[in-house]
Amino acid sequence: MMTETMNEQLQERERRRDIAEGLRGILAVLNSNKPLNAILDYITLYASRLLEADAVAIYRLQPETNLLKIQSSHGLSDEYLAHSTVILGQGPTGQAVNQGKPVAITNVDKAMDVLVQPLSPEMMTIMGILSRDFRSELSVPLIVKQDIVGTLNLYYAKPRVFTQEDIDLAVSFCDQTALAIENARLREQAQEEAVTAERNRLARELHDSVTQTIFSASLIADVLPTIWEQDAAEAKGALDDLRKLTHGALAEMRTLLLELRPIGLGDVGLADLLKQLAEGIAGRIRAQVKVNVEGEAILPTEVKLAFYRIAQEALNNAAKYSGADKVDVELRSLPAPASRKKRKGTGTPSNPRIFSEFVSLSIRDNGRGFDPKSVMSEHLGLGIMQERAANLQIVLSIQSKPHKGTEILLQWTNPVP
View (tube, helix red, strand yellow):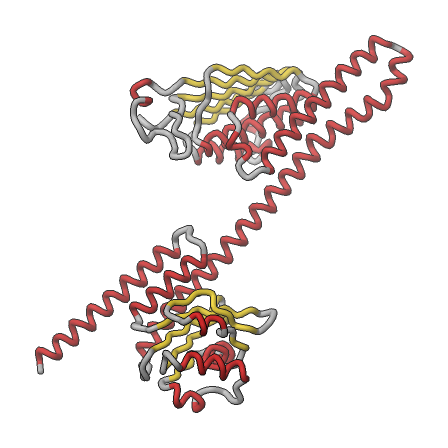
């Protein structure tokens, strides 16, 4: 008798350990970047194993229709899934949502003693199909920030009396499911906010650069016939200005179109991106903007994009605030040593090229400059530049003096030995 009791205690400890490990596994999945449906499928599978259920379903409430529909399931027949939509308030599922507490059917033969009457013909059909394979059911509401958004349903082939511990364990799985749903909502909200922010940024770029450049070009085009009649030499100068403006607008439009593509900027080399930026700025401020490139800068995508964004910010600052008539952009790169080129795995799976040993980017202008000590980091986007650089181990220095121009210098060293 004592041996039998010890075996039962041992089995119970093993069961509790499995449940604890299962919940830890679910938490690990919740912290991953897996899509919501994959996470819910994982939860239903583990709920079936650890709560010893023959089938599991996660229902989600559709507020606009007051219908509950299965989002994830395990062990249910295709016939049941085809008829599984539940009206709010109907059956164990709809009743659990309405009442905000677990509803247990210990034996389907006595289900009417538990369920709120009357049941719709659709609900009777659902219960009839379900009763062919299962005799008991536990439906627990899913609560997200005090709002009931669905249920976790456990189905058993035999009649079962649900203890408080059974219900508490089911509630624990409900908590994990609710957390997964809330995390997915927050991720979606963050993505929407990021998309909105990017659209607003592109709209500002379009207004600040292309629109104003084209407006300036249209003004010159309007007065050009009159100037030509009065002074041909001055008209030729105006034609040259018109050419620079239209070339600049075209370059900036190409850049904006690249940014609208999901992977557009990642496909283009840093040198070409800098040349497009420079051509756009030159057209906007009618300054001499030169780009000098030494070597091929082969960078990880995120580092290349950081170089590009910082250069974009620096050149925009030069156009808006510096009053410069000369801007020099220098991109220098040292190739990876031969010893690293012989090794595998130093590139990326989709791009086997070896990254450069060292890349530097300098942007200098002869404008009015400023005193870095008296300018807040948020001004001129300096704080954003520094944050972008720091996140990717890029060394950023900003040198400027009043009436002495400004130089932005970026340096990146390949961390792979």
